[in-house]
Every structure is written in C-alpha cells, then in structure tokens.
Amino acid sequence: MREVRALSSVAQRIAEGDLSARTGLKPSENELGQLTKGFDLMAESLEQHVKNLEIAEKKPAESHVPANRGRRARTICADQQ
Image 1 (cartoon, helix red, strand yellow):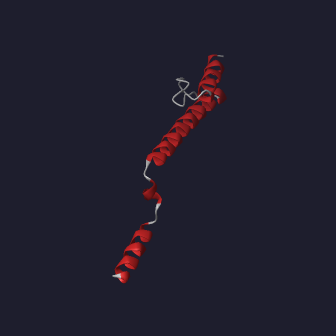
Image 2 (cartoon, helix red, strand yellow):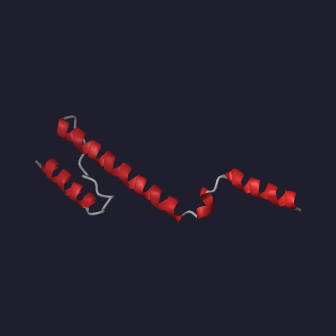
Image 3 (cartoon, rainbow, N blue to C red):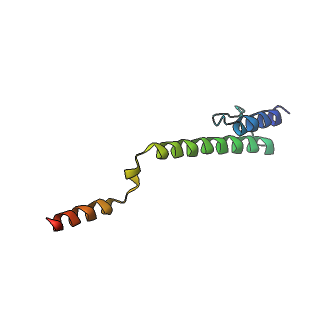
C-alpha cells in the first residue's frame, strides 16, 4: 500500500508545517487514487491560502482604510479653510 504510506507521510509533513508537501502519486480511478488527488488538491489550496494571508499581513495598515474615509477627511479639511 504505497499510496497509504505516501498519504500518511505527507499528512505528517503538513502537520509539521511543510505546506509544500504533496504525495507525488499519479491519481488513478479507484477510491484510493481519488483520495490521493483530493488530498493533493487540499494541500495546494491550504498552501495558497496561507500565502495569501501572509501577503495580506505585510500590507500597510492604511490599505485597510475604506477609500471614502480619505475623501471625507479632505472635505472636512477644505470646509475648515
């Protein structure tokens, strides 16, 4: 059961933080092959979500300010002049 060992090994690597781990097995039409394909797709999706979160955390805080807030501030300043 090479597929089961590969799935188990990759699951352990992902649990340890290696989100790039994949089974490397070719998907087949049987149930185990479908599970392998689904597992690799899940791992790929998880890796991408974590990368997106890391990118979002690195963006400056002002990128989270709604665009109209800046317009309101300019309007208030202009009214006071």
